[in-house]
Image (cartoon, rainbow, N blue to C red; front, top):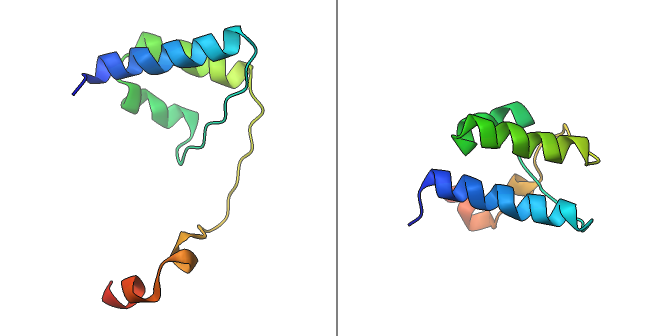
Length: 80
């Protein structure tokens, strides 16, 4: 298993390379960008990564209830 610092570096490298060659990337997250700092664990890399993403992106914010509960199998709903 790789360390969180290595994973953060890998994510930064992936996104930076995609942006550098003008390729598209879609990221879906259930957190606002401010919440990523605690996940990425390296403040300098997190700041740079979020700067790249926010300044080169089009954001779609969806504020509505999740559709997932409606898609669960009926057996899973009755057991929960």
